[in-house]
Every structure is written in C-alpha cells, then in structure tokens.
Image (cartoon, rainbow, N blue to C red; front, side, top):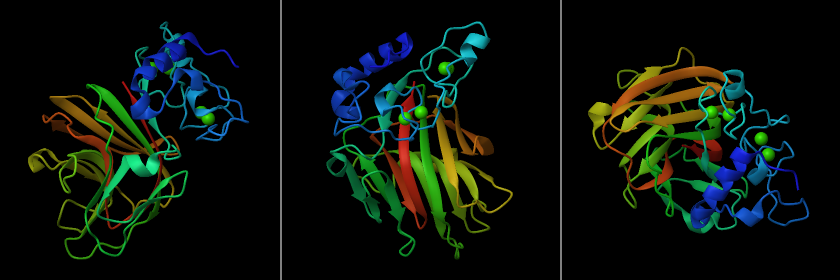
Amino acid sequence: MRPLPHALLVAVVTLGACDQVFDFTADALCKPRSDPTFHDEDGDGFEDLCDNCPTVANLTQADQLELDRGGAADGVGDACDPHPTLSTDVLAGLVTFAEPNVAQRWVRHGGDWHGDGEDMIYGDTVSGAFSQLEDVAVAPPAPPFTMVVQLHLDSVPEPAGSGAFEVMTAFTETGTDGVAVGCGLYHYAAGSFGVDGIRIQNDYNPMESNGRDLTTRPALVEYTLVFEFQPGAISACNLLSESTTVAEVTAPLTVPPTGTIGFIGNNISATIHSLAIYR
Ligand SMILES: [Ca+2]
Ligand SMILES: [Ca+2]
Ligand SMILES: [Ca+2]
Ligand SMILES: [Ca+2]
C-alpha cells in the first residue's frame, strides 16, 4: 500500500462517516488491481480513493502550490485544487457513476439519462423536455463548498424559437421537476438569455439567474464545470476547457441549496464523467 499524505488520510477518514453517501470506506483505501471494486476514474494509475485528484489524471500527485506560498499542503492535488493557495480544501464527495448501486441512487425525472457503467449520458436531443437527474441519497454539504463536474459535450442542436438547451450541475428539489439551483453550460435562442454561454440558474428566484455569452459556439470537447457556492453571497460558475477558462459568471444566490445533488438537462447531449465536491 502506498503511504497516504497525512492530510489526505485525514480527509478520507473523515469521509468514512459518509459511507452510504459517497461509498467511501476507510478499508477501501488503495485497493489492489485484483480487487473487483478497484476503480481508477482518471486512468492515471492511482485508484480513486488514494488519488489526490481522483477525476484529473496527475501522475506526479503534486500538492505543492500551498507549500510554495509558505502554507501546508492540504491533500488536494495541484491539478484539481479549487483553491491552490489555501490549505483548507478537503475532498468531501466523489461520484464516478461506476458505483455498484448507481442505478438505485440516481433517479431520473424525465429525459433520457442512462449509465454505461462509467459515465452518465444525457441524450435528450429530440423532445427538448427539461429534465433532472438526482441522487436520492445526497444532500449538499454545509456551504461554502465547490462542486466540480467533468463532462464531454456531445452535441448542441441549433436553438429553435425560444427553445433552451442546457446541461448543468444542480441542487434539485427532491422529486420536483423544474426546481433547481444550478451552474452550467446553456444554449438559448437569441433574444432570450443569449446564446452559447454559461449561467447560474436559480429557479427558486429567477431574478437571481445570471448568464454570460461565449464568443464562439462551444466546441464538442471535454469541459470542467466548477460551481463555487457561497451562501448569501456571490456564487461563481466557471467553465473550463483543457485548463483554460472558457467563461465565468457570478450571481448572488441568497437561497441556500436544498434537496439533493443532481443534474439538469434540456435538449442537449452530454456525457457526464464525474462529480467531485470540495469543502
Ligand atoms: Ca486515478
Ligand atoms: Ca488523478
Ligand atoms: Ca493542494
Ligand atoms: Ca488548496
């Protein structure tokens, strides 16, 4: 077994209290490849539970940026650290969609969400129906926290009329279609919110929504979506492609997240690889 950095060990042991939620168990650390539940989400050779960036390939496992500033490494690797200069980050949750009980945990409210054993795929490009996917077991942690989603944009149809196209990570009201606080990529018909952008959406209070246009139609590539949630303050939605910020938008979200963690989709096709939560 490869020794764990102390900070990561503390983080993962802390996660042991959340076993049913995120399937993290202390005795599952650093599984051998022969273990049938071995899983390496990012393919860098480090099994998820002993990888300091489980959703970003980082062969060096470098956790140096806080040290460079005279602080202490926090156990979250440089390649995925939401706050590289702050020593306070903790990986608080990980969803890879390869969990053995994924079909039971994730509930669909409309739309075509399906898992392939590694990813969750949203392919509702015909009906245009707004739909949600939520994890029935998971409520958001106490803010502040950061949600990071790795996804591939598969197709974005041309908007028609006032039609909306989007894929977002969200806090959804359990069992209720259409009520969510989310951060994501959207594509609206001109004259609506804009076209080809990202936005923070708050259906509890639409006045708190905010969006920003992209300068070009979004490429069908891998994206990282980062949702920084600060209750009662400014929250941020960042869209990154290959470590380059494509767009960022902020909005005041005065409604705290409720319900469960999930996704919303609407007439778009995307493959969602993973969701990680840092606090
Ligand atoms: Ca890995
Ligand atoms: Ca990694
Ligand atoms: Ca770090
Ligand atoms: Ca940090």
